[in-house]
Amino acid sequence: MADQDRAIHVPPRPSPWNDPKIRAIIYQIVLIAGVVALGVFLVSNTLTNLEQRQIRTGYGFLDQEAGFFIGETLISYDAASSYGRAFLVGLLNTLKVSVIGVVLATILGTIIGIARLSQNWIVARLASAYVETLRNIPLLLQLFFWYAALTNLLPASDHAAEFGLNIFLSKEGLRYPWPVVEDAHIWALIALPFGIAGAVAFSRWARARQMKTGRQMPLLWPSLVIIVGVPLIVWLMGGAPSQFEIPEKTKFGHDGGAAVTPEFLALVLGLVTYTASFIAEIVRAGILAVSWGQSEAAAALGLRRGPTLRLVVLPQALRVIVPPMTSQFLNLTKNSSLAVAIGYPDLVSVANTTLNQTGQAIECISLIMAVYLTVSLSIAGAMNWYNRRIALVER
Image (cartoon, rainbow, N blue to C red; front, side):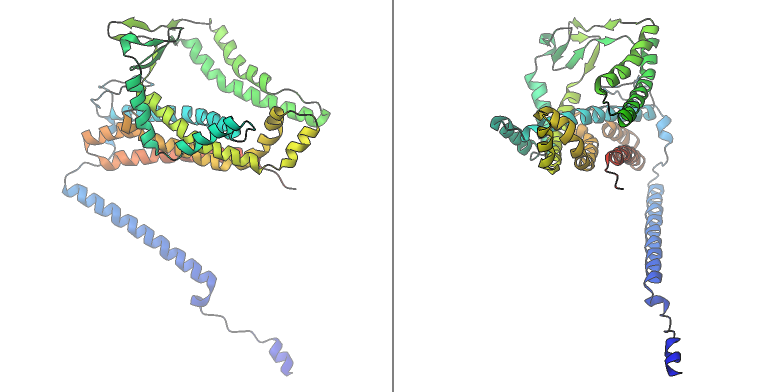
């Protein structure tokens, strides 16, 4: 009977404070309450100070006339445009630098990273010198260097260097012919996503066919034909307009065509060369992470070094390369804000001018933060999606 009493004995329930689960919930509630209280205090204190100093708040100023010019724009803009349109111009300039910088830095960094593993002693040492030099010099100093080099070493506009096809390079920047935009060009641009979708569909069909029959079809050239062919057909159906606006030499330089300013060139050169030095190390580490047995197996099948790298090593190295590469893409995008130091009218530069004229610092800074946060999260989301696509699926 005593043994039975001991068997059904239930230990006393611990007090709520000694229960780990309840304590964890209490700690989280206290933390959230503290964060909310701090946020309410900061907002209330800020609004009170602004009211005492009679400083306007809100985003109504975006509809007011800006009254300042922007030297480089992708859309129509003049001093009579609104602050909102000025912010849009700055945003588009930032996106232009970021997209071009990411593409060029990826290409250059991949080449340098592969060169560091070259069996050619000179090529490997030159690639190592590039990486060790550029990644250890602050980016801002590199931007100053490129801007000084372009503005001091290039010839004056009346003695611009001509590269044929009416392309001129001078202290004014790079000026080149540009097609006169007509409806056919716009429709061709709209057709480009359909060409990309067609290339993706063809790629999936080719892989499914290979899984069924074992026959491998070439993907690169047919995909490029589809991507280029669809907009080309639309352009031909629209009458194939091919009129170009040609730069012409004038008394004070060159006029007409499209132009890229020295500030843009210096910013792109600085961002690309600096970021490529980090991407090169990521690519090198990714290649070294692939087992040497993979290369030996490819060599046993008769593959040369080039096809082995392209078809065997790099596809496996991508699983190691993509996550840190995402960080470099984000860094390049955020580092583009240094453009204000060399006078390129990016989002930060436009916001600073707007802030100085309106005095609405909180609104301008919040817009900058919101834009960079949105762009960064978009890049991270796209790269995470791609990383999941190439990840190994365990059974």
